[in-house]
Image (cartoon, rainbow, N blue to C red):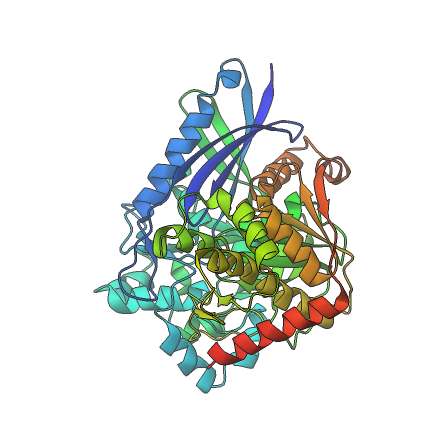
Length: 494
């Protein structure tokens, strides 16, 4: 009988289920789009019932795969969009408000108040994070403040908070398990990454009752079981936040190894082992994973808008019909106008690392009479690479480690123009795997590790390099480009 592992990958714009065999090799993928809700400028929500429904739909598609007719599902793993906050009724399981997505900026004023009250240093040293609307804590407080009776019900233990993994776990286990893993807990602004416990001072500051918080377990753990009508009880054997899952899927098991995921946002993580290095550049300290009693940490830099900027070209200003055509368009434009002055700063949701300016807004600069559609398309792709360079520069400075190669994954990593420009602007090789869905792979590998199907050594041999993009430009070119980008940033940072 063939044996399989399923990865549930619930992301910002889609829900996916991915089928792997028990040796970690990709078999099949089911995917469906997740509708976005924009109540007001700067606000982003999802319907939790739609998150659940789309996830269950793709999961059932995979469970009905022809290979599983006579096969066995050994385990499920869950990886998810992080920081997105959901609050639901413990008894009925019904959400009391929409999920507030990680991109949402409605709590900017609350964050400013916390900073003015002197909480920045405590938050950074305790949680590893900076005070920003990006993280879950202030989102929970907003829901409790704005849904009638929510605070009183939360204090009585009638409400549950969870990031998306907790929400899915609760529903997959029939309401039996309210839990999360250390990686998702470390993204809430409410979790002490040293003691691995919910932090009472941060909870009290935001008036979030500990009664509504999930139990926290290692990433490699049997969290519960999903009762499939076809396949019986399937253990849920791993949970990882999506970026940590990508780091694991890229097999960055050694201190100093780093990856960049090009999804809706862009997230760069570097394995720092058992160390939690001090960052003076706005980088985050986060938990990479916990296996058994061993906790591995990472430095993280966040670019809020990456692939979303390319989606904006299609759905926002509607200047492209096919996103996959952007690579060829940008290449053609670069040959035609190699010294174009057009720069796009995609600060649609503020700026993350190293600027952390929640009030910054996007801009197109350097337009001339010969600037056109193709100039903006090219500059938008390049902006993703520039923002990634901002992060990597900070990461190398704070860690003292110089990278010779950057591992990449995610949807936008298939764009050859972007990857080549990224290599050129960084001055290092960019390595793309043959299977770019490292997020889905990482939690599948972790689930296989949990149930004893794979060892770390066996996992490290699974990724296969599809292409390496090597620098083709001079140092002088790189410095000139950096100067233009720095000037553009100076114009929009408030």
